[in-house]
Image (cartoon, rainbow, N blue to C red; front, side, top):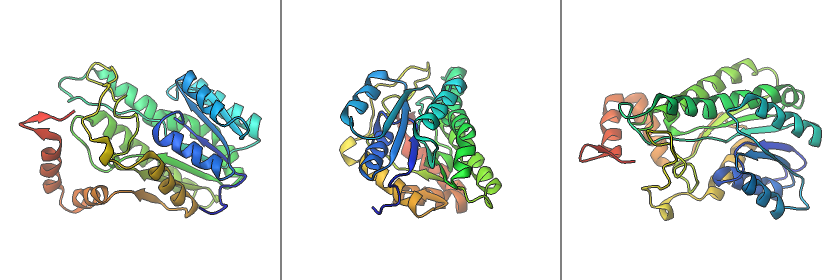
Length: 269
C-alpha cells in the first residue's frame, strides 16, 4: 500500500468488529488519523487500549440515532480538524422470510444500513467537500440482487446504492469521490448479529468460517479501491457472476438464488 492514506483523517463507522475493525487497524498502520464508532463501549475501549500512541478517536454511537451521528462527526472535527474519507461500514443483516418477520425488523435494517449512512454523510459533507475527499458505502451483492430471507437487508442495500449513485452524480464536478463496495462472505460478526424474525440476534452462522475471506483481506481491497478512486467494487467471482446473471438472465438468477438459499424447500438461515 502506498502513502496515499498517510496523514489523512478517516472516519470508519462500525469499527469495533469485523471489516470495520480491520479497516481501522490498516489505516492506523498506514499513518492515518482514524475516528470510529460502535455500540459496544467495551470493544471500543479495548481498541483504544490496543493503540495508545496512535491518533485514534472512538465514540460510542448507534448510527440509527441522528443526534449520535451528529455528535460523532462534530467530535471528530473537533479532534482532527476535518474529515478526508468517510467509510460508512456499520450495518446489520436479517434471517427471516416476510411471512414470519415482525415489521420492526425491516425498520431497524433501514435505520442502521441506510439512514445511518445518510446521517453521517450529511454531517460530514461540508468538510469532505472542502478537502475534495471520499465517501464510501459498504454495500453487498444484496444491493444488486434481492436475497430471500434477507429482503429487508436487500432493500436497505438497494437504497444505499441508489442514494450513493445519486450523490455521486450531484458531486461529480466538486472533486469529491463517491463509491460503494460489495464484499463477499467475510469472517465478521454481521451474520452472528443478524436479526431473526423477532428482531433478536441470530447468534450463530451456518457458514464455514474457515472458507470465508478474512476481514483483513477485505479491508485491504477496500482501501486499494479507495486509493484508485473506483466507482464500485464487487470483490468475489461469485458476486460478479451474480450481478452479471441478474442483469442479463434475471429468470435464471431467480432459480439459482432460490436453489442456493433453500434446502428441501426450507430457508437456510
